[in-house]
Image (tube, rainbow, N blue to C red; front, side, top):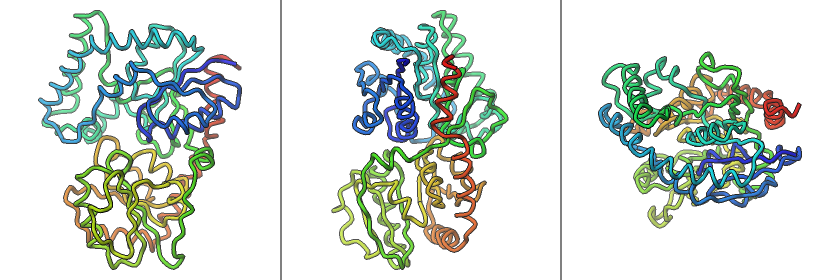
Length: 410
């Protein structure tokens, strides 16, 4: 038996894909300590030991999403500020490292977004594995696709993306010369290790020509979550199509979405389908009397609803899209931030659904897409094909085998 420390990111979309892997590690005799700040109950259901660390909690809070597009100058300034704050970051990391040492881990698995953990692992000389809950991304992909760079960092590119990357690297070099410690800013997209577990299939992953053999694709088996997340036992008319609308755990409950939900309901009040909208923490009283074909819910059982749904209107979060793929549910993707644009593009490329990226939504166009997807069987068929590529990865059992080979268990 080995002792494993698993360091997750503080968001459902980063925790959920890891649960089957953690459960399999435990089933194969590993002693797993899972560091997180949320989802305590379902994490513990894997059989691991849940740990909340105060230093890690501060690090979680220090990283905020930028929802508004910034200029190149603003982006460079934010990178400059990042390097200016690294001394404080390293103080926290040193304290976290001292706590980590007490667990005496044989190896560490960390979310690829927890880029600072990579540097802790280097100092401890402990085998480290990156858990990639988004697509695997790197700077070579940015140079191949400036739009990808622009979306990931919310930057309005005004010059050449290669020039922007060089300016960032110059800031990193200046910091290294001053403090004798190199820290790669682009690790915050993918903190690459010698082994990287990616929760999708190689076919669905874009730009695989920029990835080496250290990337192991593990699908996203939902069996553990289905068994442990509970059920609402939804009952709907079999004579109507069911359309689920959910913009993810972060965006669904934003007050800024209220106008969108109201416009959506007005337009589709007489459409021959049942619409279920996840409104997060928004009070239902905000919406007054609802059309007869609409159901608003604060907390949805997304896996159960995706199994019932004929169509999923989503923000394009990697976790939500992977769930839809597993249930063969076609999608309309309305990407809003970061990686959601490239996820939407892949859904469209493989004709598992359609992407809609216009800032000002034309609901007549959305209606056309809904009708097209509901009547055209190709969308379900193509989703089934990608779902099979997820299963063919060997899922969590294959990933654990790869981990054991990496750490020298066999």
